[in-house]
Length: 479
Image (cartoon, rainbow, N blue to C red; front, top):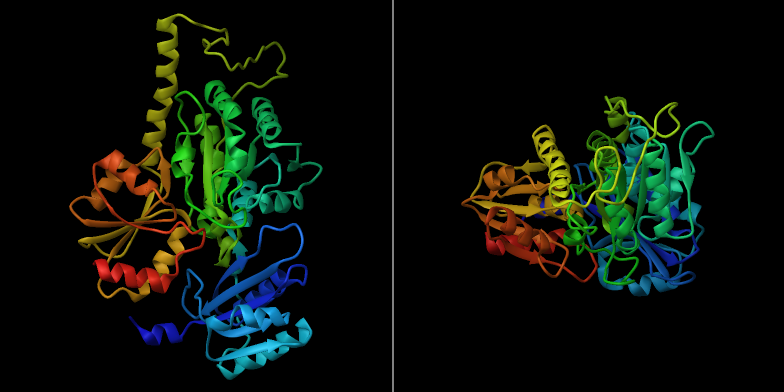
């Protein structure tokens, strides 16, 4: 491993009691680092309490792109005495501790410490912003013409609701918070039926309540985007911690068989793209589209050039359809198996015809996949391959800086439909190690089901992110 590389990365911790402005102070530090021309990764830890407890923000900065934070602290900003005691074992020799002073004074002291390390404000324009996956996803929805967002607050999806609520206007976007998740999705189906571009969002537990209505979307062919942000499960689980344990749930969500699309972005830039792409795919194919997030991706922040994406061409798929209210036309929708005119059917040959019709659409989606970035490949062709999805992208890419030998990295972005041929091409006849944050190796089992390829697995299911240094050591021991 390159010790020189690690010495070019430094980490700052900001800790204190809930309500003391820890997150705000941490984001202020992150923006200061960004203004110095640095790449930044910021993570946020807080307990599942309505009031009280200890909050902590950890930031790692580097002149090169940084995909994850590091555990050992170079600087600790302690907003109370407890913070120093809690993180004493994470301090390096010579860690600078700033405590016992107002936040503004601490920020000035921090600038002085950074200046001693040859970091100063960058006079050049910096277009990157410090942004989390939820905000980026919401901006992607807006860029693709979102009309309505409907949600009931549930960590870690709540900030999508908060952000979009701050952006609604009289003429454009509308945001609604009904009384529960069942009302959320049923209201959304009505809006899709009326011709409005609509999205909903929740944590996985909230999405579990939406299953009957989600199947209604599949039967009635109503376009709908669903943001599902995973937290440690089952049941209420550990609400403010993360997990990748719901992959199998979302790709098989709802009862009965019907096409759906499941996208899994791995960073804020991909989250923006997924928001825009999901809305367009839902309308193009008249299917529900799930964007699978998790607590790490939803709430952690990194420097990203989202404005550059907004300046580019944002796809907005438009289709000539007839909606309720059109003069002289009756527009029907139903949850029953039905013919092309919307009448209920129950004869076997008619039912088979309608099932075949729905799955003809699945074939069209698979054709569309050929023009989409369903997987991403990093590095050159190699006998050793690391495969991953969603928020494990960060620690895997950061760990790759410390690999002892070249390794090809494969990120799976489309989970459903599964791009079997592309993935098989990248993994076949290789030693494959699958990295994922769950107990049952769900991605590895999906790869085996679809391709026949058996992967080794490195799993983490304690609800915390992979540490890039520990992950690099584990991979080096296996390759």
